[in-house]
Image (tube, rainbow, N blue to C red; front, side, top):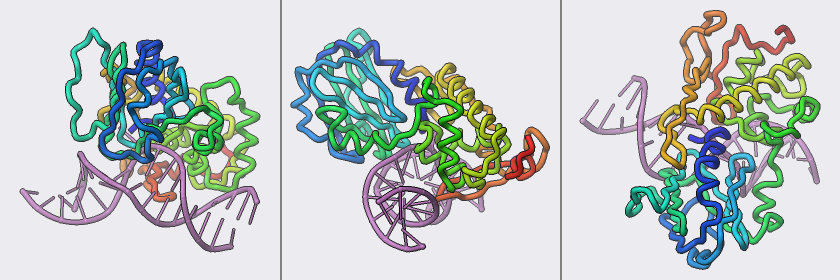
Length: 279
DNA sequence: CGCCATCCCTGTTGGC
DNA sequence: TGCCAACAGGGATGGC
């Protein structure tokens, strides 16, 4: 469910409210993707300093160590303050509770591709394994056209799969990958290094514009995304291609096509998106 | 070795 | 109605 905008919106919806809270208890439900890495009760007494984001990981800084949280494909967080209606006992898909002096942070994740991992610090081997290979943050100052261009030039992978891998720029998931390639008129199977300079620029702009807009609007409500405060997203991503196979292209009217790349669906317009450098 | 493609974890759902 | 394939992520593995 969550791509970068949804993770960022989630972060913003509870970071300020949980900052400064002291952990009273932590409890686990069914196993997630990886083990927590310590006894949950060992977290009691520590203070939550803040919440950062790297790619689709949330980094919950504690007075000692930090928690790496990932929502996988079906995860969501809720934070319910002390002064709000309590959530009550967890359901069958609630797998992590962090009870704090300011309220309860709860991870809900039916498919359990998500994770909560404790590491002593960001230089810890596990933290580095998970975070070091991540590409640039698309909404940061460091994400420049020159750096993006260099990233594409270094890879022969199909551009769609390179975007999805997150090794050049993080946060572009399966939906946004199809959309930004459509917006920049690039055929998804084009080897990354063969994308022409004008199209690289168009793609760069599209990534920044689409992700920034989605964050601003509170994330995409495609199925049932809601932030940790229960607010639903209002960026009804008017998908131009995603999920529209067989329907007419909004630009030229040709039927949108569906192809499979690395076990994932890619939607595109064969007439608008060509390897050639016309734009 | 580095790069790249494939595989797979899982519960839910939409389409047949 | 019931069944089955597909899925909004990404680490692990293995081939070249």
